[in-house]
Structures are given as structure tokens and as C-alpha cells.
Image (cartoon, rainbow, N blue to C red; front, side, top):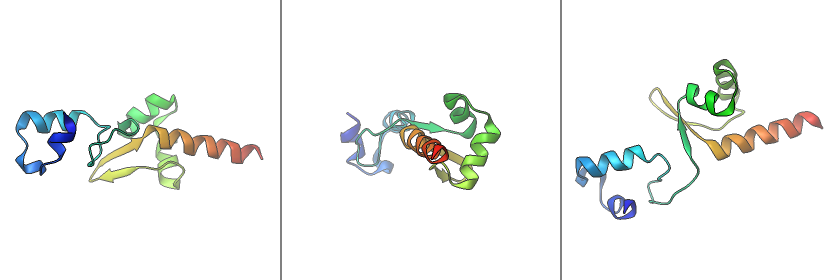
Length: 93
């Protein structure tokens, strides 16, 4: 259902289609499902069970991948977990 909605330009979507697309954060522009996306540093901190300053530090130092549009930061949880795992493995060497 989402695939057909994304096959047309976003400006041609109805309000209902647009809201459905926007609430499903795991849909890419190609309509394929990928990893779960988490919006915001506070939400990522809660998901990982770490403090907000820790996530800020990881983001600023480039430890975790993110995308940002304006003030809104998005994290792909699978990529973040891989990056953290690699960081921990590197620290144990």
C-alpha cells in the first residue's frame, strides 16, 4: 500500500496518505522497509538505556551514524547498534 503511494510525487498525496507515510518512519523513498528509525536524541537514549549526554557525545564525536534535517535528528537503530558494538570490540583489543 505504501509502495503505490510513494510511486507518485509527495505533493500529489492526500492528507491521509501523507500522514500514513510520515507516521511509518521505516519507509524509505523507494518504498522498501529498512531498519527502525528513532527520532530524537532523548528517544535514542531511552532505547539504548544510556544518558542523553552520552548520546550527544557519541553523535558529536562521530561514533554513531545519524541524519539530520533542521533540528530533527534521526537514527537508524540497527546502524547505531552496529557502531556501538564495533566501538566496544575495538576498546577490548
